[in-house]
Each structure stands twice: as C-alpha cells, then as structure tokens.
Image 1 (cartoon, one colour):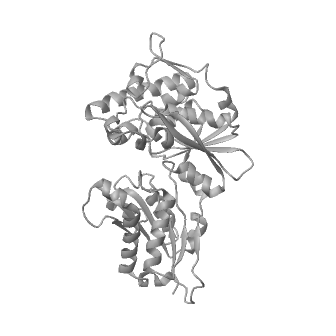
Image 2 (tube, rainbow, N blue to C red):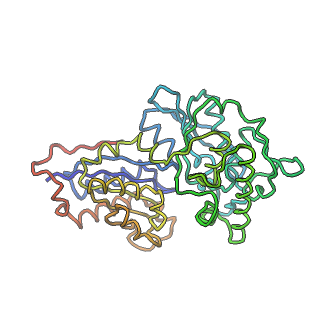
Image 3 (cartoon, rainbow, N blue to C red):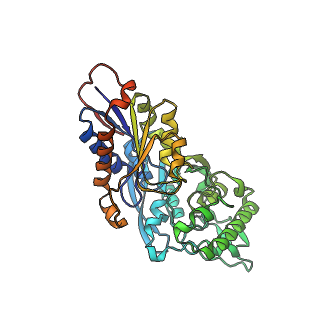
Length: 399
C-alpha cells in the first residue's frame, strides 16, 4: 500500500516558518506511515517568511537591509530577488520591516507604530535596479494605512497649517492634504504587485481597524479614533490621487498599507494566492495526493477569510481529497472551516501549557500531533484513492 501525502502548511507565527513546519510534519508522517510518498509544498501567505519562501523556491538571492522598524528603532529586514523570469523581480514582505513580531508586547500601540520601514525597503529595491517589485502583505503591527511608507518614498503628509504630521495611525486624524511632488520618480517606472488578502477591507465593521486593531494592541477606546483617522486618510488619498481606496478590495491589507500601495505607488492588488501559488509545487502535486496536511498558528472563524488552511481546503476539495489541519490554537468558530474543504482539524498541544512553552516546542509538538493523528486513522479511510500496486522507493520532495 502506498499513500501519497502532500504537506502544505503556513508558518506558525513567531515560531516556525512554513518550511520548518513542513519539515516537522514530514517527520510525523514518516513515523506513522513509513512507506508514504511525501511532497512538501510550504505556502507563504504574504506575511512572515514570504520573501525567503519565494527566494528559496526560485533559487534567488536574499539581501539584508537596515530600516526603520515599527516603533522607530532600526531593525534588520531583507529584500529578495527571484531567480526566475526575464524581469529583475524584487520581493519584500511588510512583516520584516513593520511586523507585529518586531514590537515588544509592552510597546504595541497602533496609534503610534509606523510603516516607514516598508517604504525604505521599496526604495532599497529601486536602488538595486528592480524592474518589478512583489510586496507580501501580512502580519503587520501597524494601523497607519501605509502613511509611513508613503513618507519614506517622498510624500509629504500635511496638517491644516502645512506642517508634517507625526507618524502612526492616530496622526492621520489631523491630515489635511497630501503633497506628492517629492515622491520617488522611479515608482512610475516599475511594476508593483501586492499579494493581499482580498477580504481585508479598509473601513467598516470588517475593516482592518476593528478586526485587527485589538491584536496589535489597540485599546477599546482607541478603535473609534483609529477608524475615523483611517477614514480621513482614505478621503485625502482620493483627493490627491483619484483612487477610492475606501471601497477597494484588499486595501486594508497590513494595517491599510494596501491602500497607500494602490493609491500612491500605483500597485496592483492581487489575491495573494494568485501570486504565491506560482512559486510552489502545490497545484502541480495536488492531483497525485491521497491526503493533504496543512497547518496554521491559529485556526478559528477568521480562517476561511483568506487564510492558508481554507485555501488549501478549497483547492483540495475540487479533487475530492481529504484535508487535515493542525494548529497551535483552536479558536472560536473553528468549525466553520469544515465548510471550506477541511475534513478535520486538531490542536498540536496535548495539554494546557504556557504560550512560551508551546512556541519553544512547536516543532516537536507538530511532528508528534501529525504522527498520532495518522496512526489513529490508519490508511484504510484512504483506500479508494490508493493504487493497488506497491509503491516504489519512498520519495521525499521539497518545494
């Protein structure tokens, strides 16, 4: 009996990259099903590890760049260049310059954090003669609509007295006008493709401030203030550029950075998997699979709105292939994923434990959870998809 398992996890935030998660899951599969054929297809969703994943998948190059971090202190970020295609394509991810993981818990305040470093990353790509820039949007610790990024690229954001406003989301409430005369002229000569979650709206009940603001440290009394500030920024962007970001799908990506990317940088906002899946073997290997395994840091009611397990489930469902999802945390509403191609889900934690302990042992916990789950189900439930002839030497493929 030969079972083919396709492993397609996201990273577990601040813990394991997508590649590390895939490797741990492969260990669990091989412990349970020694003769299984395994294909690893780790998937980056635009957040942490996005640049590194695309560089690795294309045999490209990675370059360290020091930029202004979300709290204003310098951080080591990176840009990549793909190893495929005729255009000189740079890749940057917002998480490396303005990610939540870069902000100590006691300093998480989206009223003050800035995306300035993202603009510096884009400028660094331009300095290295990029013809095209892919921007991975996800895992940000900011809520400034990309205002800081715009400032780093030469835009002047002014109050009613003509003075430059402060950085941070709250300062956008006092924005009276945007002067684009100083914007980096090279932006007009490059193609910018942003990989966004199209479900991320800029404003409203499902807008970036109300949905993700609390995760970034916003207190309840800050939410309305930040929402009004973002609405003001959207109006000023429309006045300066003619682009209506208030109703643009994906404009809320990464604390609203999608809005400034589209309006000020001329970026095209793409559903992120339209970009990501071009650089992974997932779609190519999916028809061969008998079982698909995926993973995410948290599986909950938000997962169907553009998260990797739901995208994996959607694609696998087209082939009738079962999908098991593993997560560090099973949150409220997780059962909704059963309507999006996920056959079953399981927490990797075997007992209650502090978050720090779970994160420190995530690799071992993930491998063990996969092993125990596969041992418990055996291969019988997959028999209808398993070829009758014996399998050749087991093959391990890495994306």
